[in-house]
Image (cartoon, rainbow, N blue to C red; front, top):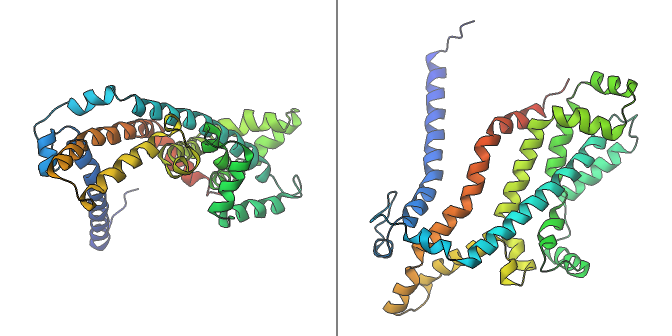
Length: 295
């Protein structure tokens, strides 16, 4: 069947496409500038000559980066955080979403737990109680201080629960007839059929753990245990404060010579997420939309 569009619809589609392209360009410009800055030399960066293309192309920033032990220590901390936090998020999300997706006759207290889950998402005790709970738990200044406070991502639980509810009931009934238990039903039927949704919530968890820098500033005291984004944030803050300080020309030149080096660190820190997303893209949109379809 051929669908014919009126000229009004074609104009509307063209306007929407133009707006999306414009927003894409606006989002990419800062990233392109940072990439160009990382490949430019010190004099060009100091003079503010770098735009969207490197000036006096050089690899020196990345050569210096290889010798920065603190950067790679922070990179390893973030990697451990993603592996531990992402795995814990996925396991707890599956174990919470599955019972909440059952019928009320199968799980009579479902609605009570569901309201409790929603309440925790809408309301929280605040930053100070959150800090003292972590402090008196005894996990301050450790990798678990970065992982355990966000162990149960409520939004991911709700998203995966809605996806589970869209799985045909006939499969569950057939599995029950064959003597499959609750855990067997979850890991042998629900999980294989829910790979798009699982990939989506996993991507959310990985991005959240990798990009989060605020908790590292509050909960980590040792420099060697600081996650990568907290370390990068400290570099960005120091650069942005240069114009507010009364520095001599020599001091300013010395400080600003770090701009290309810090830009290279930002580029390298963004590479893992940019590398993961293309492999999970085919699951991403499908995982978001299928959870909203009901029988």
